[in-house]
Amino acid sequence: MAGPRAFAAAASLSMLFAISPATAQAPPTESIQIGLSTDAISITAGFSGADLTIFGSLENPDPLIARQGRYDVVVVLEGPPRPVVVRRKDRVLGVWINLDSETFENVPVSYSVATTRPLQDIAEPAKYKQLSLGAQNLYLKPADETDSPATIQEFTAALRERKAATGLYSENVGGVQFLSQNLFRATVRLAPNVPVGTHKARAFLFKSGMFVKESSAQLEIRKSGFEQSVFRVAHDYSFLYGVFAISLAMLTGWLGRIIFRKD
Amino acid sequence: MGIYLPIAEISVNVFVLLAMGAAVGFLSGMFGVGGGFLITPLLIFYNIPPAIAVATGANQVIASSFSGALSHFKRGTLDFKLGGVLLAGGIVGSTAGIFVFALLRRLGQLDLFISLLYVVLLGTVGGLMLVESVNALRASRSGAAPVLKKSGQHNWIHRLPFKMRFRASKLFVSVIPVLGLGAGIGFLSSIMGVGGGFIMVPALIYLLKVPTNVVIGTSLFQIIFTSAYTTLVHATTNQTVDVILAFLLMAGGVAGAQYGAKAGQRLRGEQLRALLAMLVLAVAIRLAVDLFVTPPNLYSLSAAGLN
Image (cartoon, rainbow over all chains, first blue to last red; front, side, top):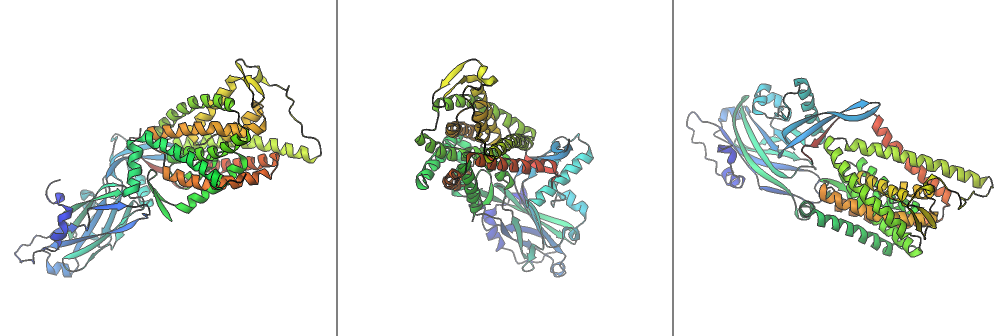
């Protein structure tokens, strides 16, 4: 993951405004850069989802192609990868029971895509598979690869469907807009249940349906102040946390009696 | 107003939770039960993950039972000795329950098991109570004096060895059924997130023949400790206790409970039992429907590698 992927997010804004005014040398190789206004987002108590705006620029774009609108950009915000079990319910004696399951390794917890146009209009499906780009094309590795391809396919489809239904996998067609020939703005959705951890923002540049270049930046999503502390205490000092929870319950019960006493 | 729950990791509405707590608190104050058997299913219906609903439900039960036990302690309707023996059994049962809980969670069968337990237990207890209370209501309406249990009347439980005297309850029974009952309740407490009052109360009345006036106080007393223990073990082994969630439920709950207790004093014993039976049955039916109706989503996701 060397090269452009190690691009530091903090430096990106200055890069953004330091675009060299294309001293047109033939053949110009286009490239893409993105920048985040912050490298960390805190989820507060009232978080109910948000739109994250990512700015980016094309370097050395061909003015003719740009004018014809043949440059396309796909921006992805990918959550931290985690292993996931997908279970399927089946009817046993009339009762629905989890029977079959399939474990996948390294499934991004969230996956938000913003594009200039619908994905199928930008490039060939095979291209996306190759790039592992888009919620439908993302490669999900089963933990047990000896399972039958039909089973794996079924559970992969179910995994994508569930992720989309909970808003964790989303697609925002038209979410990338060119502000000028060089500058674009991408809006990706953060679901209310967006996971904490290191997220990766990636931008893919396509020219007339051909993949040209990719650039990425990192974004840390964390729980802010109080929530973060509660979470950490619950995990690091679980015994004390349990004692606290019990004391709080007793105190509440006792206070409730004093305040609302009816006898 | 939304609030982010740090352990459940979702945003919820504060007022929904306060109202939920208050409604359940009202009912629990009225019937003298902890309300855990209502809170846990309600939380699950509200999309809180079952594992967190159970552990947090146990935490919430402490507040309502502590509050209730205090009133009974003041009125002297609490048998500490009986409560203590029940508690000894409860700790053992609760420990076993925690292990089963963790195992089922790994196997992906926790949700099913919780629902099944709820349906079977609530269905049985609710059905029995309803039949009994309707008969009592009929008897009192037809003018016949209610048949009081004669103190000399005994069943097989009273023939067991290791007898112990419980002065406050005017009882002389074997400790075996008392310990067993405590263990059973403790097991349910850790798996279902309930205090177990809805089983404890009828069991003490019908099986052990404990006088009705000390039953509720004693049951609440032992529930405080069983659910405190359950909360502590869930907090340390599964990290599934959400204090913010629990606090919102408790705050609504203790307020509702005081009004519920007042409302309960205006109703007669049989009427109260009939109402509670119907409530218990309603929850059981609602959960049973979910087991048999084709779920909207056959597939579910969960984090792998939970232990």
